[in-house]
Image (cartoon, rainbow, N blue to C red; front, side):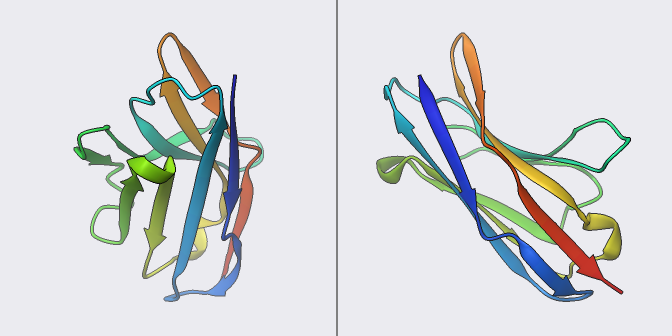
Length: 115
């Protein structure tokens, strides 16, 4: 069993920045991919970005050039640096960790961007 705890969400004005963190703990088998999804009420959860254990990254088109995902394998932590935030980035952000064959999710952290 793996537990994920996110932090770093909050309220920010458009154009501002936030940094999300997610720490994994528990039965620590090797974690493969880690990443972030986000969800707005009434809409499907969508992938924001993920990073492989080796450091390969992938981003949703809507956040390319503004968000940067990184990870520290020694600390079992994944980060999401969010710059140039827009009101449409407002959502609950969930981190996940892929420990085959299972995917584990955090509880979510709210990000609100005011115009």
